[in-house]
Length: 433
View (cartoon, rainbow, N blue to C red):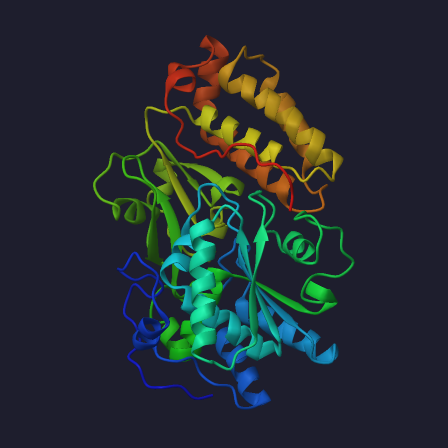
């Protein structure tokens, strides 16, 4: 592989100070052109570089990126060379804005990553999958695609596909099903997308932040990527940070930072009582446990939490954690794809009891009822939706056990009934197309 010599960017790597979209010329001046693949050996070397870098997917699962690319490339070779890249920007998590901010500022970096993925697996098509409600983001990507066509770059076809603004629409099988003409719902597939995806071809489904990292690693190498972060968690990640005072902001954070350091990076703010890490499929942690928790895959796994979709939401001391948890869980119950009984009926039943626990007439049996139903729901859906919702609920019941006791004794607290909610909850969305 070959590329022009350009100085590797210092931190931050993914984000720029400019709030406006970076043009193609600005992008090339900033990081130089992507490497050109002249042989099949070059394509496999790119994959090996990603494997050595230790880059993990930033869409929620944290799966090694190089391993995924190698799997799809191998499948594509077996399928006679047909393959597709799906750049996943369907950010259905209401508390997250990192993917849309990245696309809004550096669309060409994301497209570079997607097109390098196409080179590596032998794909002739790239699909950028964007939520319908992200109107400005879509326009930015369209403009970037037109810029590249006008520059007559020799690249595979790139097109945009729209996702409904639904929580599960970005799940990989849901994304493939939508692009193939169906509803954006997870499917009961005999084959995973890396085996048979869009048009039945092996499909590389990769979050857009992961692709942006890959575009930089392809230019500057795996050693450069590992200069920041930790051995088990190299590089940086994007986090959508909701502290106790400021508007939510997207930060590029070096792995190895603590949650306390990340929250204070937004500026002075009172310490919270708890934080929600990983979004609405994440976990609530009391501040005493969260403040010095290191953002590192191994450390998070030991604490039985995960980075998830890169959300860090702080709960002020004057809010009710039960109320926030009940609102989030009711939203997740509403967002079921409607395909599995335990998810459709189980989540709704749990949500009703959870809502009563937070806002209504509390019964002594409510907590045991929730826990009993939760055990019957987990691992019984077509996708991770019920599991993620139940995981958040269980962490809420543990972290806010004191609030449960107070609600049982005195009824709903004033904060539950009157305080402004912290977690963003979108209105109902109709349709799955």
